[in-house]
Image (cartoon, helix red, strand yellow):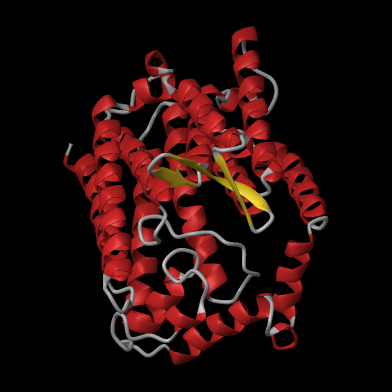
Length: 371
């Protein structure tokens, strides 16, 4: 029991530190009247509290019930994602329909879709003996096929918005869940390569994607376009010192278009220094280690798949966010869960970490614990 509690602490303590950092960064948003800082900080606190409640609820419910509820949760997330195409509900901006706005609630449902897709695949994927498409019974074959169909539907929904970063994150979470279920890598690689090629071809048909790539490759020649953001990120990295310039005193807040969401790691690097940025990366690595330990301790393949899928759903956007802010990949537009101002991502992270904690606290289980 002490070992399982240690895994939960390995996840909970870094997550709490990241959430607190997100609130502090939001509160340090410069504003002449202070209203902007108060607005974002209060909404960040609300999202964080709600995410904590979701995590606690997930840990209390337990992995068996959560995996049984995966189809319903996935259906709700998919419907929310499809709602972006409904006039009056979906918000169309910058050539994409990725957000919904209903009364006081607004946000991007993609993080919830990524999390629930990983859960559904973990619940329905055939275990190790079954391979990619074969299973020991007709029921297993049907559930396995439905899980893969649901994953394709989720990725297709993201592409239709279009939101290729969400599509890539969904693919990563699904692959982690399938690997946790024991699907052999030699079976996953061809299908994964085919999906990546299709996504790359589809992405190339959108002008803004080409603009981001050209701005990344030659930012000096595109100072009035996407290259401006690339140069601003490079400036934030160049200004970084070991201890930073202090919260709210960085210049990148004024140079970047979304300093509190898409580029928050660049802000942290400049204002809290390389040590602060390193602490953020270390916190995410600790969470990843906790997810891996939870998966290793799960005897049931469905729980193992859920732990790895949830871990990938939480870590993949954080890793992609860091890569963008460090200038390693073109600007994609992905927030860092818990730290960025992104309520949906914060709630999704709470669900993912709560599921991992539930798996870590459970005794493991055998075949009778299958969902």
